[in-house]
Image 1: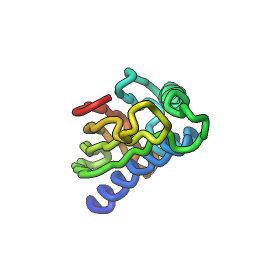
Image 2: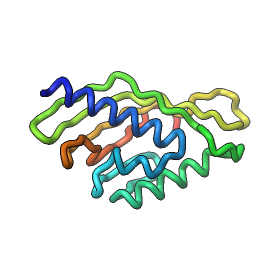
Image 3: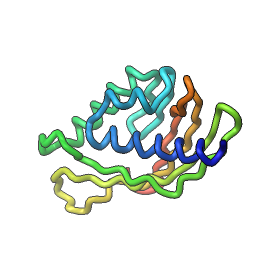
Image 4: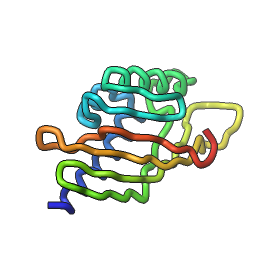
Length: 138
């Protein structure tokens, strides 16, 4: 049923944000396909091992206070999803806040738009490809 698929996909994008913000890199296995492609500000990562390593490195870079807890918070909004069978596409806004100490006290890191491709794998939706277009900051 399309509405249930759409909601599952929206929850998938939110799960990604929670995994990244809390350093749950093993949880990314429940978010991405094994061959997923992630294109973000630091470059392109291909395949789940590269995605885990790349995002873990970004987490380490932003955890300047060494708290190992939420050096940034990703707010996902305005999620639009279109489902066609076992594939789907989507776009959503990203408001990325930085929580670690820095010279500039403003918490806003960047504003962006994710463009996603989703694929159903073994009955569950996963992100097969995502591209972050930064529209402010970064």
